[in-house]
Length: 212
Image (cartoon, rainbow, N blue to C red):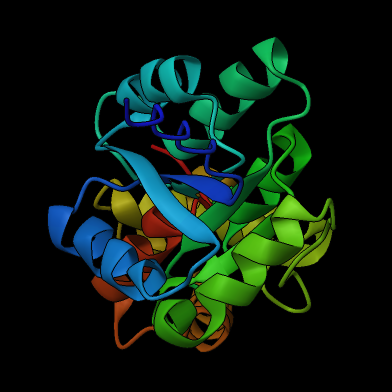
């Protein structure tokens, strides 16, 4: 009689959950880590609600979490996951350096930040570092308490711009001169690297600098 086959040993590598609302990006991440013998994508999710459900089902070793998603964003998902599983190791995926949302994600318990433009070259090392228990991964200049690029008054001015206000009306509403409004806008566009007022509003909303 042939001997019974030996049971297949349990895989002991890093189990990865990828959360992003763009399937192409998720597949791109999966393609990058597929070549690594110690990392395996065990689940994908397209929003924060799916991320929480996938985490509960698969209990990944490391999670890559996008911030800007429909239904439930990344910061809220991180807070919810960390509340139930305090040891969860979550890396933030973000588009911008100095992303205020990334700073909030770190405060919610994320262990690091990975710029999307660096995924191909930086993801493997970041995932391994997170799995090893490291914190503040990739946060040098990427995010942190200092990430808010605008002063409180500049945020007030830009919020009024987003609501359709012109310089004179904004000045009257905020109790400052029209020239001061213009000076604030010049500073805002320089800090955000914006081409015009509309672009400045778009960047500020995307980066979580302000909410309407």
